Image (cartoon, rainbow, N blue to C red; front, side):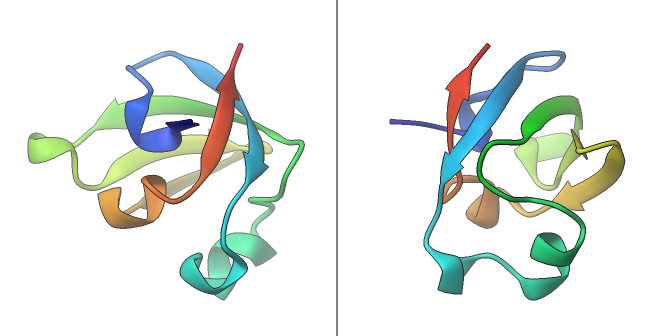
Length: 74
């Protein structure tokens, strides 16, 4: 299974699923939900955090969280 952590800069994917208890509530409130498109905008040194465009919002998430969000590359 591919996760957000597997994306390279500029790649996009569709969020498939994730364990609800492993994703911060703030991220869910910002629109990180199954069926939405996610794009990796930039990586910080050591790939943590990852800067993403999710549903038009630019957010930074930890690598640990990104590894739990399953996607399908597009």
